[in-house]
Length: 251
Image (tube, rainbow, N blue to C red; front, side, top):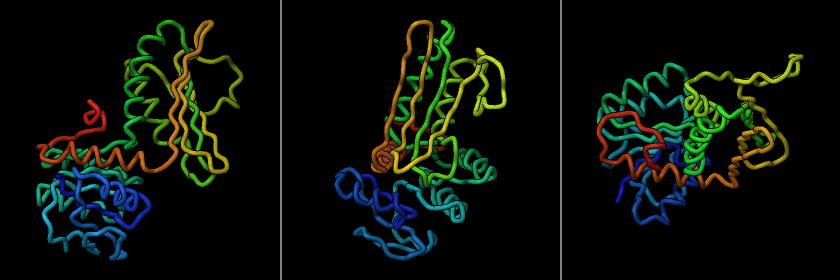
């Protein structure tokens, strides 16, 4: 059984992880970290990571940038692999992930969903086959009206994966309203829709001569990210230093 230290255990994703882990015999949360000091799970909760008494196999981090550095200090000092799920990290903190990965196993992904990470591979392969045949590439993402960032990090990750498959020869276009010209051949259009309680939806469109191919992913609940995080935890436990992604998890 993989023993998990869950940071941010009282947050929305922390509660999802707690529920999923309780139903998974291969995962056990041995302790949680949360400033509230309490959690719905059947495990001890500490106000700071320095108070932890248990010995975890891996950290699953759904905390915040404010406590990220302390969590990484603990991971390096205690040689505990860490799955970084926290968003909103500074550029300095992102650089630190690369540096610390030389000392301890670290896994970070723009999206923990297993489906999205499979989609990243599929669209990269599709671009390599279709773009040379004259297919244009567009990405449309839709989310609820409470989402603050646009386009989504997942939409950007999809665009970057496609661009990698094209030797980074493409540019990203977010707005054509002030451009009176036809579509450029080597661009990836990215559009964002915000409204109501739309679930996270990402659509990648390959539009070619006389045919259109579409890849779609819809996230109906946060559980898909929790399942991905736990799959990553099982994968990362026992791994040596290095920077891993969800692509390594799905193989």
